[in-house]
Image (cartoon, rainbow, N blue to C red; front, side, top):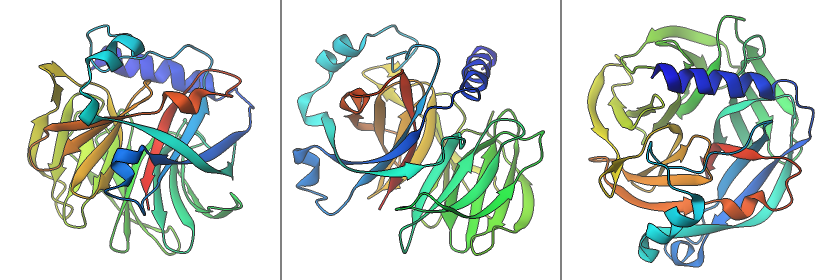
Length: 279
């Protein structure tokens, strides 16, 4: 975990000096997936970075082309961009979720710039913001009822906010090794810590109910990052890749992949996906 954290810290700091305009891209899954869930869309945000992108799904070095060739076609989906929306270029997106009335909730990172925000989807305007102390690096975010849950990087500390005015309810501690991603099915919380482990947690106590190692063809899928709950599945963006892992929420079984490589077309610099939301 020490090596993972160091790499993440280095790359995140390099992003703070970039001024390139960001956009939120709305992408729909490939036809085979859309036939089953034709009314759903994914909202993805790309962040420009100064270094190259590592296209791997585990510690095993698998190039993007080689990786795709090993995937079963029935488990492989691509995306189509159907719309783009403006986004604050100074917001280092870490957690992202959709609320009603075209409203987004967003957790941003970087020391001294971390926050929780309420954002108008179509204009990108920040409607409300709760800034965090300089010692915290904001990470994953999810909404359960009227409460927003947020975890922080390199800490076992998280925060709960009121969704209406973003006032802070309370602070909590969790049992994951680190705080990277959060999602919910409306009953329990799913969490990631940058490893291959998918956690299930009790939202009342934040204690781990169960945890599963996510594997694909015998290889651990490491660097599970931002999470989203989608129709009985947990979708996890694999950090510094163009891939979203589709995972069973019951036992951590890999169900398939969503490949985002075509989103790279037209980018002026290298980038990687950091936010997933499901409408």
